[in-house]
Amino acid sequence: MANFTITGQVETPISLTFAELSEMPAEVQIADVQSLGAKRSGCAVKLSAILDRCRPLPEADHLGLHATADDFHASLPLDAVRDRAVLIYGQDGQPLPLAAGGPFRLFIPDHSQCKASEIDECANVKFIDRIELTIGKGHDNRPRDEDEHRAIHEH
Ligand SMILES: Nc1nc2c(c(=O)[nH]1)N[C@H]1C(S)=C(S)[C@@H](COP(=O)(O)O)O[C@H]1N2
Ligand SMILES: [Mo]
Image (tube, rainbow, N blue to C red; front, side, top):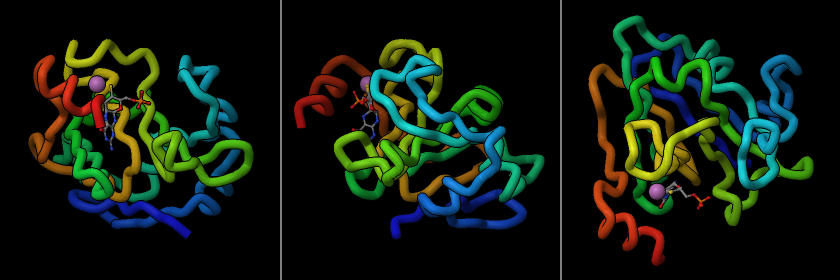
């Protein structure tokens, strides 16, 4: 079963699967992210609950989201997403399909438009296989301007 890992500046590196996420307590689950304003339906857990399990070191201040599948990476200020972002992991009781950005996808409610800020729609990284806590900003190859953005939406 597909999993993703959380590594870097944490006390305990962990990896999680669809089944393990499904079993997390009800109070950290979001039954349908459409209730948070997402375009498509899907179930999620709060990022804070995942971070509670690996315990980021106090010095960690950025959250790296890595999608090896298409070499897409974002590094976000931890404070800005810690208590707000969720990780979408399922749809209709099944693992989140690739077509919906699965098996794991970040969703930041009330994100701003593409490129408007660090925390924008482009930060909703799809196909996540690794989350990495870093001290200082890490690898980030999100589109930086209109041309790069157009290019990424073409393929
Ligand atoms: N892995 C991965 N995640 C990604 C992207 C990508 O190309 N690869 N594009 C980003 C950008 S630029 C945007 S605007 C949104 C688009 O989300 P959507 O495909 O659900 O519309 O996903 C973001 N997450
Ligand atoms: Mo974007």
